[in-house]
Structure formats: C-alpha cells, structure tokens
Image (tube, rainbow, N blue to C red; front, side, top):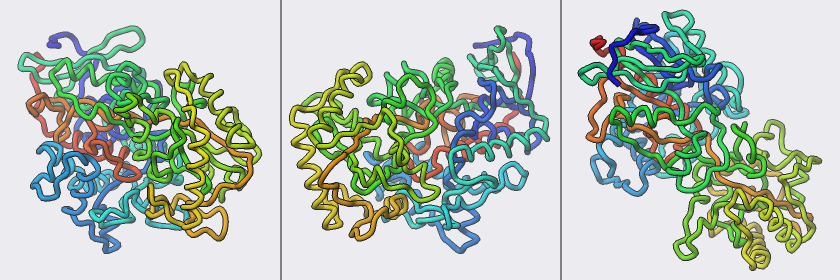
Length: 547
C-alpha cells in the first residue's frame, strides 16, 4: 500500500510485537541511538515469551568460553543442519546440503548469538547466566547430547537473572527488556493491531497501518519496520492448511493469529517452513474448549509407562524430546490411508500412578495427576480388557474431535502383546525397538522411582490392575513458519531479495531451525538472536522518502 497520508506518530524504527523477538530488536535499535516505537496487539506486553521458561539456546557463549569449553563452529553447524534439514543434510557439501540462505541462517545463529547476549547484558537489558538444573550449575544435558556432531553436551542453555527455570521465568526476561526500554526514547503502545505495511513510490517499507479503539492510524518508520508478532497457532485456517496433521492446542497467547503471513504476502514476501511448529503433546480432553493451554507434556513421567496407537502398537520412544516425539502423531500410513497415530494412548500402571514425584518434579509428572487426584481425562480400569473398552468409549465421546477415530478390533490383544514385549525389555534393561533410556537427556528427565532396575526408564508393568490411560494429541508452543528471512533478518521475496525496510524475527517468520528443536531454548534463542540482528541492521538503514 503506497501512502502519502498523515502520520499519527513517527520513529526511526517501528517494532511490531513485544515478545522476546520484538523487544530484543527494540533494545538493539534503541541502544544505538534510534527512536523506537513498539506496537503491541494485546493489552499486555511480552506475548508468549512472558509465559515461557525463559531459556535461550546460545552456542559458543561467553560462559562456556570462561569455563574453557570449546564449541567448535564446524561441528555445531553440522549438528544444527543435521537436525534442521535431515532430508537434505550432506556433511560433505560446502553448505552441508542446505540451500545457501538456510545455511547462512545457521551461520548467523552461531556467529551472532553470543554477541546478542553480551550486548543485551552490557546495556543492562538482559543479565544472562547458565540455566541451572537443580544442583547442576551448567544446567541439563543437551537434548541431543548423544549425537557425534554435538561436541558440547552442557552449557548452551542460558537464562536471565531472577526466578528459576520453570514456566513464567520468561517474565523476568521480558521485564528486563521493558525496564531498559523505559529509560530510552522508546514508546510501547498497547491494543494496536498492525494490518498493513505502507510503502513509498520506490516500494520501500516506510510504516504501518494499525487499528486501535475502532480507529485506523498510520505510523511512520523512517528507517525500518521489524515484525516479532508471533506465529499462527490460533489461526485455525492457517493451521489446517499448512500443518501436516491436527493440532489440539497451543501454549501461545491467543493473539498469535499469523497476521504477518497475510501482511507480508501483500508486499511479495516468500513463505517457508509453514508445516512446522514447536511441537509437543497434550491430553486432548484438557484442550477441548480452551484457547491457550498453560503447558504441554514435556518429559513423560514413569518407568512402567508406554504409548500406543489405535492398533495397540508402540510407535515412538516415549522418553524422546517432546518436539521430536510429537512428530509421531503426523505419520501417514500409505496402506491404510490414515494418520494412524493422530491420537496416542499413554498407558501406565498403579505403581507410576501412586508413586509421588521428587520435590520440584511436578512439571515433569504432568499430565499424570498427583497422587490421590483423579481428573476426568485419566481413564482407569482393573484389567487390560476393561481398559481397552473404556478407551474406546472415550473415543466415541471424542469422535467430533478425532474424525470418528475408534480402536482397532484387535487393540486389546495387541496391547497385551506390546506390554509383554515391553516387560521383557524392562527385565533386560534394553529396548531394541526404540532404545529408550540410552541418552543423557532421557536419563536426566527420568529419575528412578524404584530400586533394582537395569534401566531407570524401563520397568515391567504390574501383573494386576488397576491400569491407567490418557488420550494424547499433538500440540505446540507456537508455529515456526512464515515469511522467509536472510542472515541479516531481512524479509525476502521469491528471488531471495530483501524487501527494503522490512525485517522479521521469532515465530512470525520461517524458523532458522527448520524442523528442529536443537535443545531447550531454541524458540527463545531464535527470537532473541534474530531480533537483535534485525534491530542492529534497521538502525543502519538510510532514512527513506515518505512518498
């Protein structure tokens, strides 16, 4: 939209969204002397970031270097590329098999991450540290510490000072940025929904049009516009069209409706990674009728516990990282022509149900209820036959949310065979199907709940009931697709050319991580690093003509 209209307000840089991506961009720009205006759609700042654990994944950070730990660049890039683009990964290629732009995004993440963290610390916006995990000062092990490309198994997870690593820690991260910006020439306007970009006759982005209080207003950006407005988790149309299967919930704030997808298409941006999200699992029955959920199932609790599909078959390592584990829900069976794992059933026995978790592990235990509590979403039966019958009854009630999914007629028999096989694996301490309990990550998040096990993640099911089940579906923190960016955080067109004056970072753009969740903090890390890059570069732009 070309405009010569009046401006409600002007600034060097306009930032859309006040989560970590937007506020990191605003801080980077303001610290370099730019006037900054932040437009937030919601009545509150912080977006999903404020509700998050606040952790950010930063390779080669200064805390690692201070400990004398080397994080080799080439190895880290191989690690990132292998997980982000497994279908293209080629360790012998100069770009590791990736497209040039995708490879340069990984380079930028590695090369600029520590710079971003250090700068935000130096200006007093975010004071970082290792993200501690109980008594482990350097935190938990990497989610994929076992891969040969990963040479650093601890210490890439960072956290801001204040609070602990748990849901809501992100409020400290956002609070630090907010307090810093309050000391600068930065205004944050709430309840402003940006709907269009404004361009001059040369096609350069020079501002935005936003709606607020029933009015439409135009805001002038002399140098650039940066979007950090969140993904499209709460836009059902976009999710249904792009995600490869059904999402049942999201922890994203409800204002994350993918506004930038439409806005950027209007100016010729190319889209990428639209089928991906930051995935996890959720009890379907908890999610029904709700908007934003306050959690997903991160690290499944219990040793005599497994997950099966409608046929009674195990289909995934139940202890795998939440993002990777959730991909099992999107498997399409070319023979049956079904998403056979759309719904999975978490099965566990009375030992798991009735053993209290250790202090501080309540978040990991969830959704298995605390001892003595019996929520409606937990199915309980005395025998395997009764459990199968109760699960099928529950599916009948949920048919409107599952496409009429029901158990296979042989479910009960197959489930009993699956459990018997699982019990043999537990007795041996080795799971030949999914190699459960062999990685540092799985062991870290599966503390022993009984003695005498050869593998602390595997225990035989009790020979008698009661047995329990929870119906699980795929969920997400937020989506991970949108307009594509380059290594300078500029939004690019179909020919990979930057759209003048337009930047993006965070979940509103195509994630530099592709389909991967490298380890805890990848989501926040991506927003922080590329938000910083966007803010740094927008300030360098020349002032653009307003007509």
